[in-house]
Amino acid sequence: MKRHLVCLISLALLLYGCKRETSLKDGKPDTYQEPAKEIPIIAHPDVLVVGAGPAGIGAAIASARMGANTMLVEQYGFVGGNLTVAQINPMFTFHDIKGRQMIKGVAEEFVSRMVENGYSEGHMTDLTFDNASMTPLDPEGSKIILLDMLEEAGVEMLLHTMCVDVVTKNRMVEAVLIENKSGRAAICPKVVIDCTGDGDVAAKAGADFTIGDGKGIMQPVSLFFRIGDVNTSELRAWMKKNRHLLKDNPTDKEIDSQKGIAFLGLNELVKEEIAKGNLDSEIANRILMYELPHHQFAMNVTRLQKISGVNAKDLTKAEIRLRKQVVEVYRFMKKHVGGFENSYIVETGARVGVRESRHILGDYVLDEGDILEGKSFEDGISCGTYAIDIHPGQGKMQIYTGSGKKVYEIPYRSLIPTKFDNMLVAGRCISANQMAAGSIRVMATCMAMGQGAGTAAAMAAESDGITRNVDTKMLREMLILQGQYLLNSDLEETIDSTLILDREKSDGSKGSHYNPFNK
Image (cartoon, rainbow, N blue to C red; front, side, top):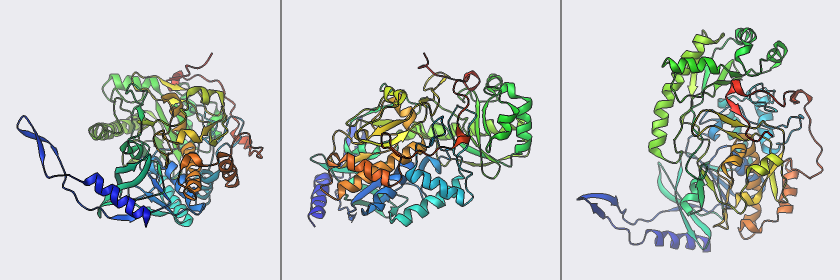
């Protein structure tokens, strides 16, 4: 009852004095003040998760399994975020170069269920960017399996719903204002987890953040799409005849042994077609694609720089231009690559994929040294082993350090915004600089990070709701009991000998990438 009254009072103060007035500039209005109105409070969950991408999925499931009354708000009509909305594929990366599995828990449970239901062949080798493993998934199957997992955990979902504002008082989030077809409403949680990717909740609450590299330069956006009815036998034969066009000139054995084809190269052909005007000049200057179930391929080729993922006009521009790039890339594949003669475009992402926008300032800022050194933390809540992967915000060359060489932990402190006591962030918007964010932003790492956030939020909600008061030693013990892998924990290692990476040092020139940290 007390929390209910506090929320009502806060909302009244927020809306007090609003008038139906406009301010004038050059004789024309440039602002409009909404009239005051009562906003119904529809829920008082222990934990509110905003955003149902991989981080939000991990957070909501972990929180609910801990016994917390958990609510998940998502703007689309299905869950999965970049995995399903933007069609990003595969998931990266669960293993290091020695075949050791570094990400388990909810993320591995999801993959296992996908395999059991025929939506994935699981973890496999990758001949593109020297990743220790990749995990291709059917995006439609992902929607079903993720919904099943959320329902089984007891998560209350509210889809087709956006966070539009946040009410705060004395470093506490008192209400998250949402809007959907039913109108505007308020949710008053004990703890809120921002898993929007862009840090929307934290930003609306007034958290400090940087954009991109701190000077406004962000990684480019891309639009993934799938091509179907590819003749993979013909494609493998074409790859053998044209191996000189591919990264590292893969051998017949390497090409044939791939459970799912991972393809990178053709940068000279791409440059020629750009020069002829057949491809957009901003397109990635190489072809990167991954085989999915049902003889489909996920295409990671489109690209557009100088787009802000938190600016509607920029996103509109990107949607229009990148969809035109999709058609250009498809025509390129039919013209140049064997096996694509009778193929067709299955689907484009429902929205562009945003690699980077806000980085919320937290109690600890993760940096590239932490990633490259494989640093562990006393409050580490999940592991990562993906490369520092920075698509160029300007120019053409991509930074890529190679995955699985080092395993690092993400500290709980990087999930706590400095200005707030009952808020966590999880996913690519956590407290990290651009270089470190280039590693932690991938979906497997985000889902593991979300599990840590959800577990911590449930622990906080059980007491005073203060996220900094969570006993991180107990938090780590709880995560290990849940099946999560953490460093310095004497856990038995799971090793897949088929995923041991033979090529630790390879030439990135045909993939248009380089490693600036090589000495």
